[in-house]
Image (cartoon, rainbow, N blue to C red; front, side):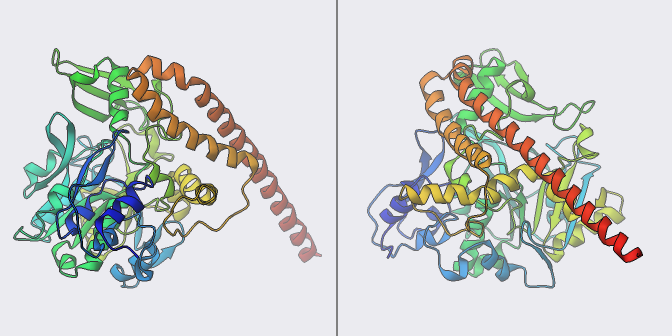
Length: 471
């Protein structure tokens, strides 16, 4: 039984499951929690005073190891918010429509296709919401970005790009009850889940927050990620200003983007192609541990989910293209109206193609989850209930990839703290990253052979049946 705030820290933070959403600070009746930086450059909840409350703070935690049965997983929670006739898929959750496309107005000023910005401006213009909680430039040097509140188009456009920097809803959510009007919130899967859990515990928040935009996420990165990229680009840690994680090359492919940072020393922007720093996502470098225990690839609890169209032919277009999943009637109406008015370039996308656009994340978060859960439980660590924890048959090469990803993730924090220098970091990490790369390549090779052999066998069987039928 959870009977005080210290249990929140004990069960979540001390088990390295806090993702920094900050919803617990909103829920705590005694203001005994606040968000602060930990040694790994991530925002986590810390206890600032004694608290004798009933521990309700943890009920809004997306990684609560002991949730109520009605909020056990995303499946149970989604049933409370998407009750209308709707399709369902065990990989992406409930949905109405699946699309690929872009906003003609906002495409070039956004990280991807600009549909997120389009939807938010529509929500404001239509009077569906009065305010938007989204990530913008931070107010102090320690936080390059933070959640801010917008109530008009001009303010909103200041936060129209993706920021791979730790943020928390704590500051803005503390004001949600005082705001006169309705609010839309932009967030990744774990933050969206926290908001939905807050709405479950307080029904007034359902009316207050009528719309949520979900960002399909590859994992929450530590602020070490920004420090590393800045140093690699030639900007020292103490001089980092306005880091930009998605500088497009509209004459190249969608994946051929750069990182840039302004140096406070001379006010010059220095950039580096992300291709030069290697795979920062598939390796799990600087990624929060909690992300290894998230099986929600597509922000299943949001009204609309948006990601990058990492598949042909869209990936060849450097201007950027979104994949889109609508889950509420409001979201579907906005997308359809935008298409009819010629403001959106949109086409239907098959489930198969959509899933392939995020295939790496599905493989890691859902297929590989059973291995990580089994390993964590063997080490007596607490893990929240998951839908994909039932052990599947996992080849030894796939399990080795999972093992080394976890090792590299953990090692990246210790190595950066030791050197705080991109060159030394690369040297120290090279051997482990090389092993992971070879294991991953071998796993892909074996999977390709197995899939090819299986497909050939199916074709042979079908051909044989056809011959029999002809006879």
